[in-house]
Amino acid sequence: MNRLYIVILFLFFLGQSSWAQVKNSIYSMYGVGWLLDNSVGINKSLGGTGIAFQSGRSINYLNPASYLGIPPSSIVLEFGTFGIYNKSANKFLSFTNGNINFSYFTVNLYLSNRWALSAGVVPFSFVDYGITSKDEIEGELTSFEKEYTGTGGLSRIYLGNSFGIYKGLSAGFNASYIVGSIIQTETALESNIFSGYEFKNEGTASSFYLDYGLQYIINDDNWSYTVGLIYGSKNKFNTTNDVTITYNDVTDSLKQAGKYDLTIPRKIGVGLSVKRGDNIRAGLDYEYGNWSNIDFADRKIDTRNSSRFSVGLEYTPANNTSDEKWYKSLSYRLGANYKKSYLEISNTQINSFGICLGIGIPFHKINAVNLSVEYGEEGTLKKGLIKNSYWMFYMNVSLHDLWLELPLE
View (cartoon, rainbow, N blue to C red):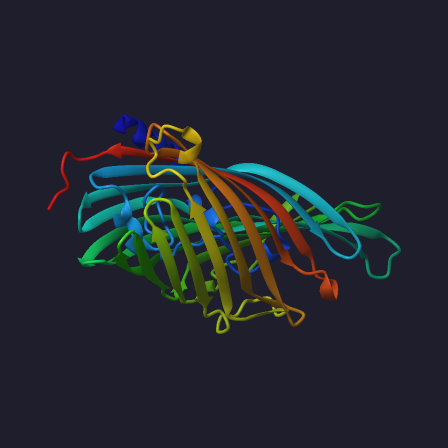
């Protein structure tokens, strides 16, 4: 692979402006939006599982201690894209939408048997919703429609390091810059004698962020067992907020424009995995977020501690990707997850689940195209709330190249 090609790809994907937007969801209107910490790479087809998985065929961004797992003296480049079909509904109506978009770009570089680097741009959160309602002018018989929309989200630019500490034990960290903008708009449409208005809130958020990981591997004949731990610290964002109102084609800035509080709490996670040669691996993750102490400006919602459970299984029949029969070199993946989100509305916690299937198709020995499909649901129809269901089709490409003649010692 031409290394100039890698650089060109990196610059191209870095220039994309819509990393974080994924699917329409009313629940993305709160805080930093709907979080996407586990939505890249083949981890997606494993239900988001990966805290105890090593990087190898694909870069495992979930645990920075994993980067040492790529082949020695190699560089791995990876990028992904997705398509989504989404349905949102309450007890009275429903609507559908869909889109196709780029998702992420990462690269992993093996420097020695004790040090590996990773860098890239990955989604952190998204805001994407639309609501239509009716209202009336007080004292008048005139009614008009209101539209509430939100777009944007946060992306994460990171540099990760993975270090070999002792036999079987590795540690790592990601140093990240999280940045993005969120635009929320309330529009009253013109109706009879009412000329309408537009109320727009444009906010930006940015912050440096550190997260850490550990992995310990125990080898027993052809089997290996791994325990993984991750930790992310509480973080407050630097924010700006510009509020404007447009009425009769005149736009004015409102005095309450300025900074606003935006914080994400600390998170911890633990994972267990088992692996048999290059044929079978399975993993189980649990992740916890301390959201109960985080308050939003909207008093209609409360925050609760979040949790995520996921499980994933991968099977590859061939002992190596150069097996004579091509279909034996395919990797088959299955995963599922269940999330208790940090949102509570009308005393109801907004939860979600997803079920994933995937396949890895190798080419040129160790390169691969990975395809997956996920069905998921979030929210509920109870208490007048909204339920979202979606199909997501995901593709990522993993490219491997020799970086050094010999690993550095």
